[in-house]
Length: 123
Image (cartoon, rainbow, N blue to C red; front, side, top):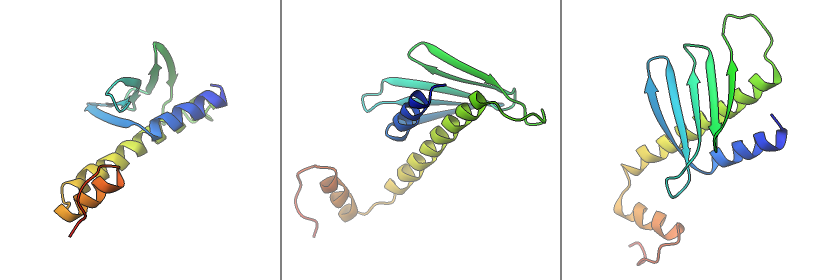
């Protein structure tokens, strides 16, 4: 994978929403923009040794088995770098979603203000 493409994928994942769906042996990550449009889908088939990344109809696939005792190819390293970015972004967003459940009214007003909403001062 071209380094510019890889970095663009990573940057895109880091600034957008990530949704995770778990199935037995498979984690499916979907990266969506602010309007809910799907930008990319990453299937982490860890139990089957299959990993796929789909962007705009183009699919990248690798096979990798933990017990293969082979050095990773550059393509495999690239796919895992992208997977780690997407899974870390999901975890970051999940922590924020959980923290949002415990905001005080004053804290919510401050967050709204910092996000550009015009509101009264917090008291």
